[in-house]
Length: 222
Image 1 (tube, rainbow, N blue to C red):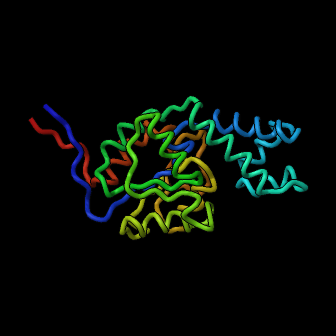
Image 2 (image 1 turned 45 degrees about the vertical axis):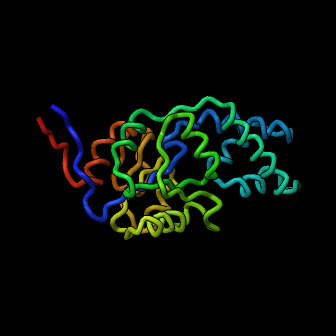
Image 3 (image 1 turned 180 degrees about the horizontal axis):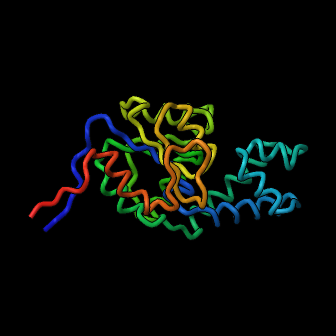
């Protein structure tokens, strides 16, 4: 006996954040910011706490207002690229099963990172890369603006109300909500404000995400 999910129902799409949602990169991000802070003689923990809440250029303005932000960003990018090449990465439990089960053309990635890093991390963790990937270079306004998720929907040919966003962070949840999409939170001990549903782990959410995408529970065939 074999079990397979039904084919996608027309007009239902899933949009995933990457870091913290599909890829466990917390230790990597902490290490990169610790090294970056060391270069500028700053307290690493204090810098990381700011970085968690703001985008890089905003972080630089807060912690090194007297330094050239372009120089700061170049240093950060250098460290992040090196981490993609040499860091240790892991996909969250359930990520591979989930992405492999989703029919092509019904899902995409929306990340505040850059495409080459996402592809590098996915290659190292064995995750498939979809045809639609909206990264930081694709938009002028990042999360929590709705622009990234709206662009992903446009590229998929989807209406916002037919999209499910999977996120782990407040800025991403806000972005999805402002785009008029259904938003589920994963991989956090408590629910992010505004999320329509919350799952403690990605693994817990896998069956429900697949049901949303296919419109049916598992179908069994002998």
